[in-house]
Every structure is written in C-alpha cells, then in structure tokens.
Image 1 (tube, rainbow, N blue to C red):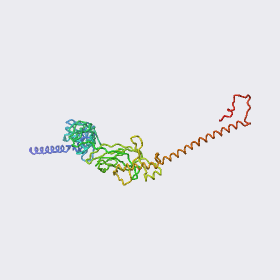
Image 2 (spheres, helix red, strand yellow):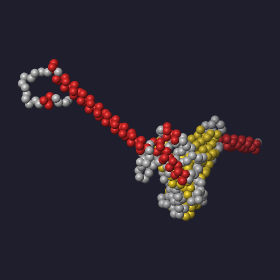
Image 3 (cartoon, one colour):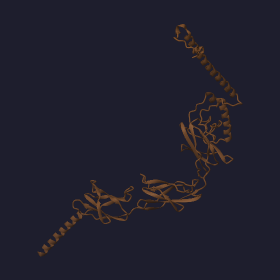
Image 4 (tube, rainbow, N blue to C red):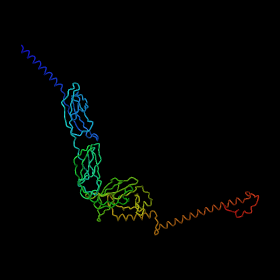
Length: 449
C-alpha cells in the first residue's frame, strides 16, 4: 500500500514537472534575424551604422554596441508571425565594434538568445583614372587628369612617383563622382606615369588606382587661319573657313568655342596644305572661329589664331550683282595691317566640297578679278581710267548749279531793294519834315535795303 502511494506521488510530480517545462519551452522567444547591415549614405553619415531585420511578432528589439545598451530598434507590425525592425546609430563608428541584438516579448518580457555580429567598415574603393588614355602621345604639357572616385572623398594625384596635388571633396547623386585635376607645373617632354589614391574625411585611404602611361612631345604646329570667304558656290551665311596646316593633319573647327566639324587636309608637296571648310548655316551677327590640328598619332596642336567675323545680309547694287556672276553675300571685309580695309578674297567657281583644299594661287587670281569688278561696278577713281572723266563732268555740273543758286539770290535781293525805294518815293507816302536836316546826304536817301 505504501509502495502504491509512493508510485502515485512520483507519477504526479513527474507530470507536473513535464507540464511546467513544456510551458517554459512554449514561452521562449526566438532571436531576431538580421537582413541588411551597412553604412548610411551621405557625407556626415559616411560611417553611420544601420541594421534592418525581422523579429517575432509582439516583440521589441534591444540593441547593444560593445556590450553597452544603446536603444530600441523601430519595429513595424506586418500582421504576420514576424515583424520588421530598423535601427540607425546616431553617430559614426570607428569600425571593429561588437553588435548584439536581443528580442523581448512585450507581454511576458521574456528575452531571446542574443544575436552577435562584428561591425567592420569596408575599405574605401580606389579611384579609376580615365584620361590621358594609356599610351597616348600629346603635345599638351599640362593635360587634365580625369577619373571617377567614391562619393565624399578626395583624390591624391601622383605623377612619376611624386605627389603632385589633390582634388576637393566630391559627391554625386549616383554615389560616384567625376574629377578633373590639372598639374600645377608643365610636364617635361618624354614618358610619364600617373596614378591616384582616394581618401575620405575620416582619414581612411584607398589602395592605388590603375596606372596610366602617356608621352608628352613638342606641340604640333597650330594651323593658320585667314578671313572666311564666300563665293558663288555658297551663301553669305555659309562661309568657307580657309587656312594653312601641316600635311597629314586632321583639322578641328570651332565656331563660337563649339566644335563644328573636322576634316583631313589634302597634302601638298611643300609640306604645308591649304584647306577650305564649308560651314553649316550661321545665324546673323558676330562670330569667332579657331582650329586645332591632330596628327596621325593623335597628338593635337594648340589653338590657331582666332578670327572674328560678321554674318550680314548683303546689300549689293543690281549691276554689281549681275557682274559678280551670282555672288549674293559676303563676310565682313578683313582689316589689313595698315588699318585699311582689304578686298575680301573670293574663291573661283568650281566644285568645292566640304573640307576641300584650294590653292593659294587660285585665291590670289580670284582676288584680282574681284578688285577689277569692284572698280567697274562702283566707279572707283583712277587717273588712268575713264571713270576719272565721269567724275570731272559731275563736278562741273555741280559747280554750275551752285553758281546759279548764288546768282538767283542776288537777283531777288536787288528786286526787293528797288521795290522798297519806289514805295518810299511815292507822293502819298511822303511826309514833310518840320526842319530840314542838311546833313542828310542824297546818297543815303537812295540806300539799298
């Protein structure tokens, strides 16, 4: 009997322990799950930690950094078995920090096992150099060095192993910023190497960028420009850009500081080629033009001389228009070194395509013809020409006309004086004076008014 009682008590206590153990297991809270961990983007938040994750429903998340309680994460209810949470640290971290997250049931305040991670700041990406292109040969001794760099960082530039300078802190909404650096001294003739290292505002530095190798040579001779010309093959607002350049050159044309077009010159035995480039239609008004030349290896010259000109609607007499054989416009006449306007050079008629070169001799011959046409069209004076006789006849006619006007004025004045004298001598207009003045001279009575 005693044994039965002991067996019953044993079974009762065993069941009781199993019940409470089951209840304790059922009340245990699952640990939170980290979905994303990183740094918030932005200059002042470059090392600011944020954590996104999931936690069991009806729980809150406690955050510990380096063993010290920091704050609760923000939890958003999803209406499911788990809720989402987000935590953002208010200050920047140095890196290597221990992060601990614990979920706590809001009703029973039972804590979950902790989730521990180590926060490591990722290394700063190295810049990427873009230009000068590796292997490029250039005549510019002070070229721009361009590339890409991570946001909120600046770039240190090294040329031939020597620190040359740095850019400012840069940023772009895409997360990657462009930079352009110009060496503070001209580079010498010969090969050069350039690389870069990025650094952020906390002092963290990247590795070395890609290395670019290029070569600087003496500049290629720049083209020489003359004043734009217009002939019967084009219009006044589509002038030809003409000049001289070295053989085997590609000419780039800049109108109002904008690249308008480029073409290859036609080589000449002398080594210097003429060129003529037909522009697109230009707006009326003032314009400027300059060119650069590029050789077969891609080396570009400095800018040529800058030529300023005007595009205007031409106003030409009908006779001159017919004698010029259809010339309907011209660019503003160039000014010679002596300060006098020199005749505008008009190229001879022919099939002049865009970029075709025209010989200087042809241009000179055309200039002579245009000058002769100008003389015949507008009657320029020359002591050996018949136009001088026309000018003399016109001058004589003008002088005769002026003398006639002067004579007519004298005649009118004399008639007015005569009428005035007759009016005074008439009997009805005479008044006898009380006393005769002997000093009155007869000549005064007959004076002219």
